[in-house]
Length: 134
Image 1 (tube, rainbow, N blue to C red):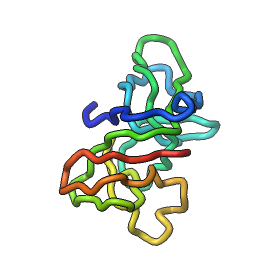
Image 2: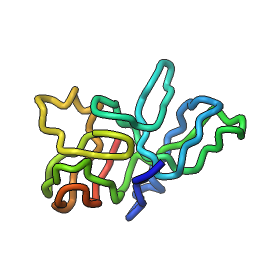
Image 3: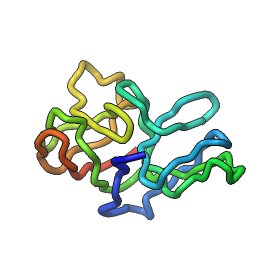
Image 4: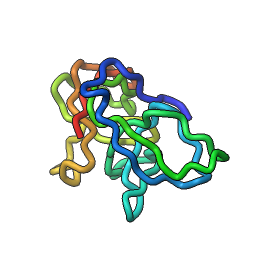
């Protein structure tokens, strides 16, 4: 995959939370993850409307037999804007595979879709620092 989040700073060790993932899934460290199924199952983000849970803390090989993965939920990460630009102080949401955009629609499906607060402005398709605290 491309455009994985890059750690700038972790708070409380990133406060990792372990979730269930598909045994055959291949996930890169830094992948933005969303709640995809019941119970407590996550997958790599794919588009608008995904309910963000955190940033993959480690690599997950599709042939390793593992069915769990920890995600960072507390820190500042460099993330890629989906292409419209984003402004300092706005709240970001998922808008594609490892991409974010301004959470500008009414409620952004509540707080579940929100990624975090943007800490700097960015032009279209630039990388921007985002503070997540899930």
